[in-house]
Amino acid sequence: MSFDCYIGIDYSGAEAPTSRLKGLQVYAVQADSGDAQAWHSPTPSNNGQRVNWTRREVAEQLLNEVNKGTRFLAGIDHGFSMPMSYFARYGLESWPQFLADFVHHWPTHGDYVYVDFVRDGNLYRSGDAPPPGSRTGTADEFRLTEKWTSSAKSVFLFDVQGSVAKSTHAGIPWLKWLRDQAGDKVHFWPFDGWTPAPGKSVIVEVYPSIFRNRFPRDARTTDQQDAYATAKWMAGMAAHGSLAAYFSPPLTLAERAMADLEGWIFGVR
Image 1 (cartoon, rainbow, N blue to C red):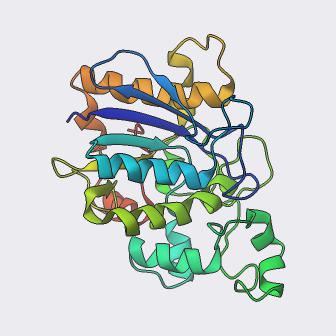
Image 2 (image 1 turned 135 degrees about the vertical axis):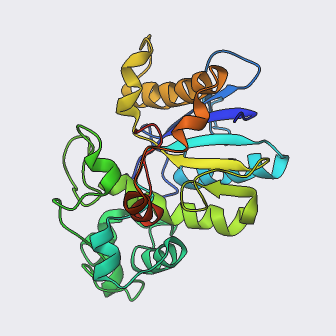
Image 3 (image 1 turned 90 degrees about the horizontal axis):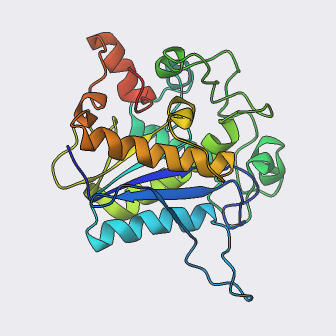
């Protein structure tokens, strides 16, 4: 289980998908190198300085890597799905069905759409989205994988320190976009199966708190460190021959059936 490149993405659900966000960081380890290097937005600035990524650019960069033939493992720091209670509440039976339904109710991939525009009903009043609350949950609803960690928060817990709710609601539409664009060249784990087919790039959900303190911080910000540590940890596990074990966490058949819909945090065992 090895790849050409290991990519760590510390995500941000702030502002719009075309906004340049300091908290959106990308680091990668090439298979033939030891350290993780920062990837920068391809957009040039007027003064020659680096500019921050946008969510749209990150999705486009992953698609570019797919089209170049790079076989990568990318870990993204936001929820890829919702708890079983959400699926039952809204009559959803598969992850592809969930993606289509979610994007209809949370069209946060629109160029100027903030997550909060959907939450407060601005898009509903403009006729661009269903009414707020049509697809939501409460902060005491957890996925099984979140219960297996000591500190992961609910995907419905907004507006608190360390929350992933906004990133999740901003990021899921881009998973669907990339899935639609890349077709079967990308394996979304574990929804497309627990063992990725040889030759495919793989995208997984990560929780950088698991790896953050395993590597010296140096001069990196917290967001940079989270992306750096994610890429370093995945590459390190591959180098040690241990990566394959993380694609098959020790779940019962019933637990695996839940995770087929809810998803799983890569690295949680």
